[in-house]
Length: 618
Image (spheres, rainbow, N blue to C red):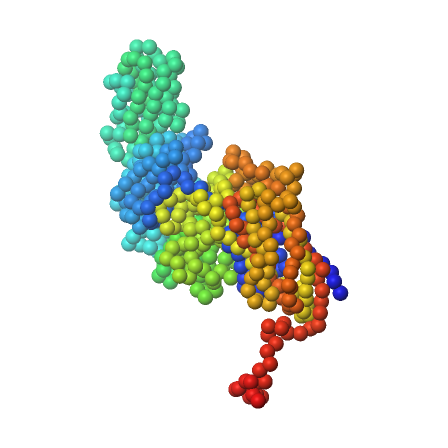
């Protein structure tokens, strides 16, 4: 009896919880740097250094900020510095910070402009994205706190205060009106370059809506909210909203009109409240269950969810801002790290480490029968227990949930898991990440081992080197305990002309042997039908603007020699060069079934005694 056995697509990821014979037909029992997309098994793209390479250490915070015209500004914290990317150069903005401290970053856009706040162990820092080289230090013990925070609905939500790790705090709600904005109608300017007077009245102030009128010519310079002053008679100028420094061209002196704000006076960094608290003022709620600290706070259905090591709290604030419900939401669930939880459109996703021997990827998703969230385990076929999550970071990028974690003996994150919730697949890569920033289809990673930032899944090399990789498939018995033989393997997919990959086979766990190599220059490659793809292609669609490359379809046949009779067969692929490769179809040709016996390598005549104590008896 002879027939063919076919894998028509590779939609499954790595399934390593069950033994290799019990996983899906196209699944991997183990893999590194392959992923599944649209039925294809594809070599993971590489990474590209952003700016200069850093020294040993880690990236301890980051975000994309945005100017009011949509231009993005990339921020990060490394060591003692908060930096912004100026062109291709990382430039210091804030210095003198605690080197090991993690910082939270949050964006806030108001009538006063577009700002990025960095909050950490040293204080609160406000940066205008229009003037990223300048900042305001906002920490004031009578007004606010050090910790971690984000801004939501005009209010800063803060936790991880050094002497109070189990409370959540809220600032006053920024009213964005004359209660917090001060108008200066006509301030004399002594020269064409100077500093607006608001700054001398308070270091925590910033300006916006600036106009400067020259007395002699009547030319009016108007602020475009990205730091540029445009004159009505063709002049040009600049304004720094943080420092108040301005310049204008042409001649003459004049007057300035503008507004200024102080975030510590009724704004998002003012946590004060009256003796009898009023709506819109600051608040504090203790969340002391278990005594363990609040690690992260996330926006979810019905309010703010505080994730701890052993439980989660829900803080729901009434619509009138005068009442709230603060309660333990779930017990016997939690995570180990600040970034080990993440809010997505599907719910709050976190690595549940309540049982350290069996960590589970879990989502708090809406309950269809009510208005609460219920925990649901994701990816039950993947063995998350293979990794350590004490510095775990969870993020998202298009269809994927990203999990940065450690192999057991690693001192820092050395593994990145790509988890596709819709396709229910998990793929393993060895990228060492600590923060993720995703924007307009492009993913950036802050390293866990050096103070470097990378554009991730870009190009076909790992910062100049070939990508380490392998894919090991199912222990395939084709549903039969009979011994088998087969003659050929057909493989179909796509490949770039400078790439190649080796094909290995193991019979009954006897070790892998090379059975063939697929070359991008082989005669079985169809050069008449190229597909043009970009080098950044993990996600829903290819994002334009990056380097394009041609990928060619191949359909190759490997003829096998000296195939033993086997019970189980395992395939392995290893890409050898730099470039694209995929496998989308596999056929095992001329499969023959034989008698039902133990494979020959296990058939040893030992004459075991009846009690099993001795062998090779005479």
